[in-house]
Image: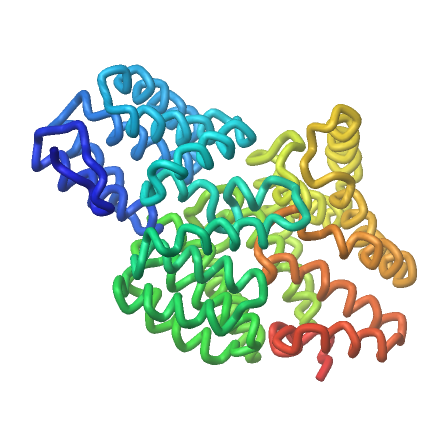
Amino acid sequence: MLEDRYGLPLSTASQAARDAYVAGVDSVISGVAGYRGHLATAIDNAPDFALAHIALARGMFLDADVAPARTLAAKARELSASATPREQSHIDAVALAIEGKPVQAMQAMHAHLKTWPRDAMVLAPATSVFGLYGFSGDADHEEQLYQLLASLAPAYGQDWWFEAVYGFAACETGRLDQAWTLLERALAANPRHAHAAHFRVHVMYERGESAMALDFLEDWMPRLDKRSLTHCHLSWHVALAALAVGRTDRAWEVYRSSVHPGGAWGPPINVVTDSVSFLWRAELAGQPRNNTAWREVRAHAQSSFPKAGLGYADTHALIACVVEDDNEALQTRLAEIRDKLEVNKYPPGDVVIGITDGFAAYGAGDWDSAIFELEAARPETVRIGGSRAQRDLIDLTLVAAYLRANRIEDARRMIAQRPGRQAAVPVMGYQ
């Protein structure tokens, strides 16, 4: 039988289908545009090749084309009747995540990897900050993911995809030296690996190396297809780094062209959360409020996430409501969250409500209340998902509230907890 890049047998006799499948999978797991064409070629050459259908479904799901992704997943399930046991298990694990069944998907993934640890497409939905662990609501999900990847490391060796996700897990658990080694090796093995480039920038963020991050991205980004899954979010990193080093014109240029809803292509979760994050951070750094930009982001958040459900998206949609003084939408979403909490169907718990109350108090100029709410929410903030860099929005707002309340020593003490944060964004001119 023909094999994939990880040495796993494939149920197709078509070399053309196999080659296109491998190229398509590499495109999906590297976050670079092209998978649709590759996997369509695989299907054209082998219409009954179930793995090509589920790989295409996975890529489309990541692009937020959810309905067609679920249709393809159903087709893959149908075709899997004639596939091998490994492929049937692979399809089930990946399809469960696409079907919106994260608990079952996690269980199926763990069971599958016990027998086939090198099945990267089954492992992939669990990795990174928007994966099964990241949105589980568990307070220790970052360490759980790191330990899973550490246990699988011997099976993968120096594979460019695995070392990138392993390196990011190391970064998010504070193992920065290990993260840097893994990510440098992954990027050297595949210089166009967008996730490796992205995760490398996270290490630089944690170290406070904004100028280095900006230089790296300005050199690396021009060769990344704007249709790539990662383009919007990497552009957010460019804008943040530019803001941090005082290049505000460049920060706004990148925001307008590649982050905000009118200029970006990207999954709605990236466009909404990165836009809200940049606009709020820009104000913390002393930029005047851009009312037009906020109005556009609030509208995009409401249309993209009309109902509460995903804590990370809800947090940013609620911040946009706070800024726009849209109390009706704010209270409606908070009520939906409370309803889900009553039936234990909201993984982050009530921390999203606490964060919202903190931002609302800050927006109203009630610094003491903002400090009270954000201090209370901070230990549980990890439960909303997102990276440490993304969740810094809450920490930086707390620092700004301390400064507004003339609690300078509290601000200094908090910044000292992570030295890199001091250079991440110039909060109110703090030095």
